[in-house]
Image (tube, rainbow, N blue to C red; front, side, top):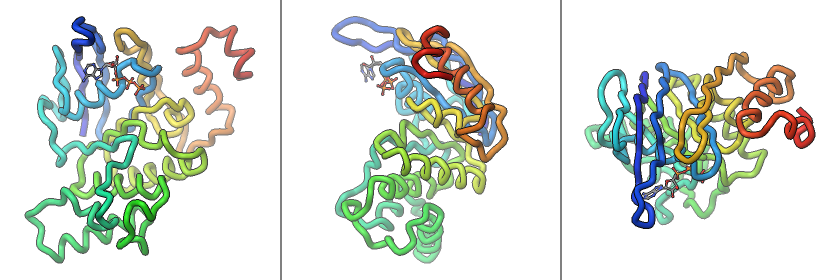
Length: 256
Ligand SMILES: Nc1ncnc2c1ncn2[C@@H]1O[C@H](COP(=O)(O)OP(=O)(O)OP(=O)(O)O)[C@@H](O)[C@H]1O
């Protein structure tokens, strides 16, 4: 679904002082697009994602989903995946995936859908396993399947692979893209990882801090699947790094 973020401003009271965390945020996401949001720690990325999810109210401005204002969470429209999988530790993979499934479905429909989702995230054979019997990447896949079960049109991912090692992270990025290609879900991904932002995003929204403001929106026009080692990828990487570091520093520190 298309999302419009319009003049979003957010204040928090921190230590008795009113602090502007988000200032006049504007951008749009087309139906089935992937947007990556990058910015330094504390610049307001998670707050922005929560406002888009309807979990947090903006102080002014609005977020619209297909022209309709979002003012409360709706798991049917928007699924959220957090950095930590947030699974029920005493429940099996299939029970965790079942959690939150539409109660209007019959028992056999539920069973079929759960099986399809276990398969979609590559966990067939682990249906009865408990979270503690799974690796971090597998747990995150359970959390992705759980978020997808009600087929939200939009999925918000807040640093979903932040706690994973580099290899698992790359595999998970590919898996999410695989699901995206199948389902054409609109994705918004918050990340600290610039390569991840480029690998995944059709657009990258760069936020600057204090208050969080859109510094630049970069279109990533690289064909998919993207090659992280290509010159074109390096060109986009350089453009993103330039938003954070002066050009002279880049040449020395990053050799790009
Ligand atoms: N519920 C809250 N009440 C008060 N202040 C908050 C609240 N949530 C976030 N903040 C403040 O808002 C600012 C932005 O926080 P946020 O978590 O959105 O940043 P972030 O860019 O996601 O950071 P990180 O990358 O480190 O996760 C921080 O200064 C934080 O202290």
